Image (cartoon, rainbow, N blue to C red; front, side, top):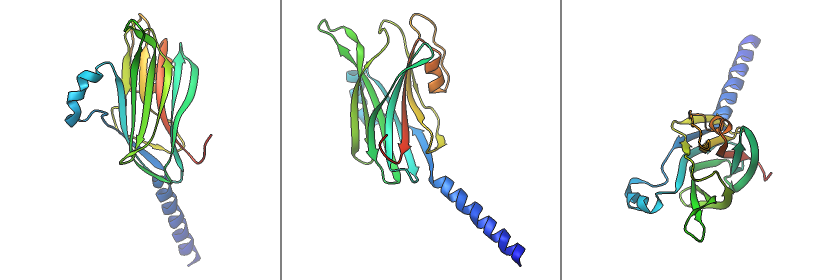
Length: 199
């Protein structure tokens, strides 16, 4: 009898652990900043770099945050937070990112871009902007958005957008956004993460 009770207790603990683990996972799926019914806006935004993901989270974390990293020649040159938003253990919404050129007085592209990040959950919950020094705009670049659904624990940072430029050199790209940024002369990685309180 004691053995049977012991087995039942072990099974209950395993089930509780599994359900807790499921509650603390994050599901990220690709999305579009400009939906089909807004296609007419695309010509006005042709030079804008965009990324958007759907985020489904239920767990113990109290905030969702977004940060960016700049990699140069394989080294992390800059890492800065953009926004935080309170989620109270649950979030089912979207994170969208856009980067647009800053033009100088001669209407030429400067080396800086304005990055805007928005957290939406039915309505805009939070948004933030950063002025980012980028690569030489005469050179080509690749935009890396996530292509497939990602399931991950809420204690991990999740790369959702990357931009890479290798100067005049050739750019090779894979599905790993962060690794792509580490292999080129200049790379930008935008990440989301979950936390219990402000860092």
